[in-house]
Length: 286
Image (spheres, rainbow, N blue to C red):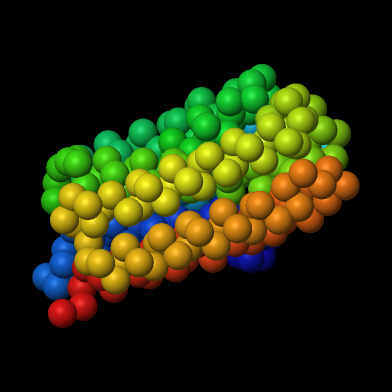
């Protein structure tokens, strides 16, 4: 079996995206005193834990994936990888990741990573079939990577780490809702009870705008508490205003809901990238 098939089963796009925020948390905690070997160990351990969690998610979501156009050709459904092999692979990745974090970072980092993995596989994955609040539940594991990066340096969860967690929770909600609106027909076919399917697109748009506003406030609070510089503050406020402006466009035009969702989703990716890079540079530059 080509290694590429196993590589793709671990959802590398999700791994790289989470590493971006984890590195930002690491740099914020480190300042200019960067331990590059510790950074490498944290990144490797976290990548393995996320990869293992994603493979478990693929295993549990086979019924849903078969109903959706963008996931119907995944390796487990095509038979390229057997379910038994996927479980062994997922377990190996998760165990290796936990061992890496335990031996080369610290226990707090490992515990936060386990909270993320268990909440993703054991809570979010089954509940997304049952409740419209699954997006909020799913934001918990998605918000742990910057905390993991931060704790690898500090060995503790403090106000700074909690603010990072809150920022990522708030960012993920309009990110998720954008995907839900953009792919609403596919999710409806798979019988996933997302907010736009159960409550309508307009309610979803309102919720998205509220979360974007709260994300901007939370991101700005890092400067309010003295953790970041004013350059960082200016950039995150500009990002938030642009995101809100893009949300106002076509806000009440129901015929453009998928386009609105896709636009919001794409800008959410720009936002988290710029946020992470800005946060990192603000921490390490003189």
